[in-house]
Picture 1 (cartoon, rainbow, N blue to C red):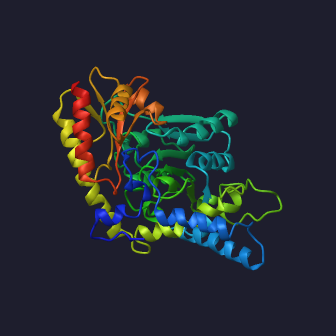
Picture 2: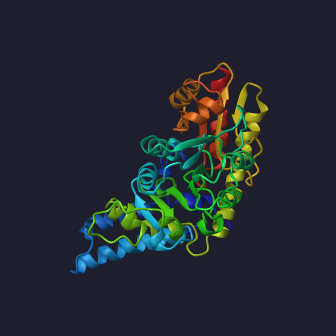
Picture 3: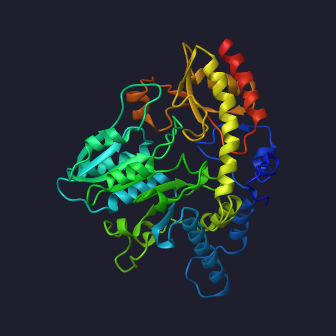
Length: 403
């Protein structure tokens, strides 16, 4: 495998992904990235040679356990956490559901929920509030094409009764970077209040450091960070004091995996995490993510310059390509054109793969962006996309829109 380096080499990066050698061009990466070739090989190797249950003392059983444990160690190290502070599961949606079932709430507690969210970081909390009679306060924004998750608005919603605030690091529609450190500091001004962050749309583009961010809970999806379909939830040791264990009564409860795992950490997938971490810089990820941000800035500059040049296109989120304020997840609509129709026309005449819809951020699309059922056209890029690909998409898009 060609490990990413601080001097970005697009050909070297792409050579690690078998799917990129084929005709399809992937601009739906916010829904799921392509998978590193060595990860695919490792899954096959594990199932061929180490496919046994955890805990056995015979030789293959010990090898299997070691690979699994290394997956947890690497996952924790990737976000600057301790191994007992992470749990791996099938999806962010499922892990947030487990978390919401495990937090100990008290009568009168208040939950502050952002309307910028993928529903994964809303539905579980709304359901828990309904079951326990808790109060939900909505952190929202006026209808706009470039709404902001404003900490000043959050401050108005906080009270001594606030138990949890849930928000996203980056919206999967807007691509705007939110100031999580400031939000965390504000939340923690309320004694006992906890911050739960959805980092799914942030993690493919920037380094995650949960200690630096100051969050209590943070979730990412490895299948959007060049791995297979699994997710990982972080909970600080202090935050875990607010959790009850969902596990069997006779099992240990010391770690987050003990508390929330429910035997759902897939063995053959979990053991691939060291490969992903190594690709993204291993113990020194900062230069790699700086190179990724610089390359992705070029891609979003090309696309945004085109979209901004057309009076019939409305871009949602920041129209400035500055990588300090956005990632290359770009959504837009075209005046008097169907979002679905645009995407299907592109499907029919090219190999460019993108999507239309609300992408599970239904409240954002309906209430803040004021969109209809077809939502947006979304182009979501990552570091293995090329300038040639985005220029080619623009030519096809221009032809489709002008037809």
